[in-house]
Amino acid sequence: MLKEKSWQQEAECKGLPVDIFFADSARDQKEAKKICATCAVSVECLAFAIESDCKFGIFGGLNHEERKNTRKVRAILASRECIDSL
Ligand code: SF4
Image (cartoon, rainbow, N blue to C red; front, side):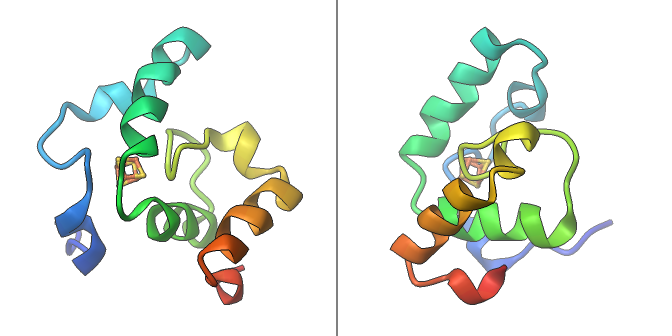
């Protein structure tokens, strides 16, 4: 079993069904993104997904295709001074 990271304790998605965050359709992904938008640890989550090279799922409010947009990702991480995470 994977060890939970400390920031995951504060995750807005904690306890929610995981499949919400792994939906294929943009419509269903919207639900996950709404949850991420209120999450206090979205930057940590996004940095984790990038470092782990996650190919699926919504992390930090972005899906895999969106995470490949380096400029967008850097802007989000820079806004919270996490730019060293890249
Ligand atoms: S950003 Fe979204 S997926 Fe990441 S911990 Fe927060 S609610 Fe969960």
